[in-house]
Length: 453
Image (cartoon, rainbow, N blue to C red; front, side, top):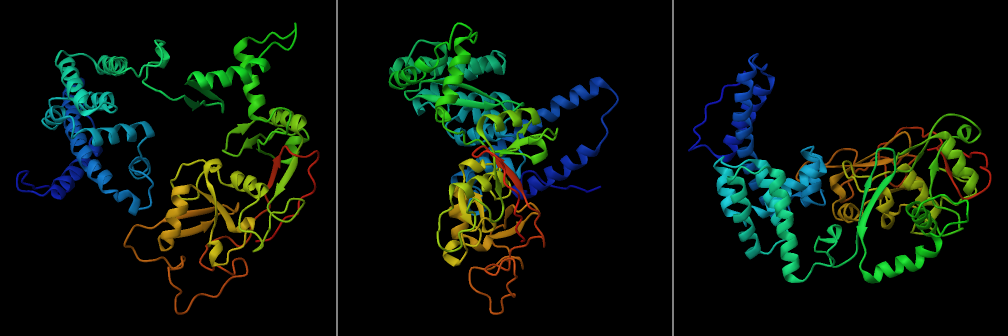
């Protein structure tokens, strides 16, 4: 058991944080009392203390955000840092970042929050309600919403009234596009929100301005008409089918990549998957293959030119499809940007002699691609058995690992390996098994041509 002896008045902020951490660690290991009444009282007291801890946390996050410190550590944003280093869900990270950025405008709220007379839930709700208001409207909204808190209104009612305040301001300023409830959000431009469902589908919601709505009607209207007297689909189903037809290029071959074994296509039960890891039942994978045709993408030589050497700098579309299959997200550890939105990156740098070969490429988001170019000494690169590279970020100021080349050539570099004559610092297994990938672009898959490491 650790002993804690701190004078709250004279102690530094670091000493107080360390003391709080010691107390929290000890408290987490304690068994809860058997008395339900005692646990109820303890819960309320501990929650009030946690609310004040959140007030201090918001102040710390605000300083980090203003100083752009997270960029030095290789994170593209403060929200990304909160997700990866503090293990927060995206919604929680966004909520705390909003509080950190709005607390200087919400002076009365911050004072009451620090004093422990208002909860973190109310503070987050009010900060979210005023985030898009100017300073004058923010001050008025703060007074109104704090008044609702004093009347013991729930956080849900405060949030609903905060939305109503934004609607009234939008009507006052003439930025309300329509009286329709779904469009009372103050948007002048078209917008679309999509949310992934658990079964791999996607919910879509949005609003189009008059110009975009005319394009929508002119493009999808004719395609959404009933196919005949036996077409029993309703308008919503026909519109979705019309949109899919447009996105896939009409009667052109689809570009969706399905990863599966040959056994799956010939009647097996092993499920396939999309490039982002979403499972696809074997029966559905066979239907996709029958509708669009199949051809394999191999990590090696074959019918598709994957190895371009030094003759070309930019990766081909075929190479990119392979990389998107291997890399569902950015190669940087902890970065969640989907591979389909990333840029092709030469692992050792094309300017340094790296060929445009598939086993020398990976995917990184635009921010980390630029960060890697200016901080090459801050990366530790590993390669998995499946051929995927992972970039591990080193904290600023730390010594370089032995497996990563420094920014300048060492006096006695290690001997280049046969696998990577241009970069002997890359850590990877000795053998890489062949990867079979199917993509609907041809009729029959040719035999595999595995390539050694």
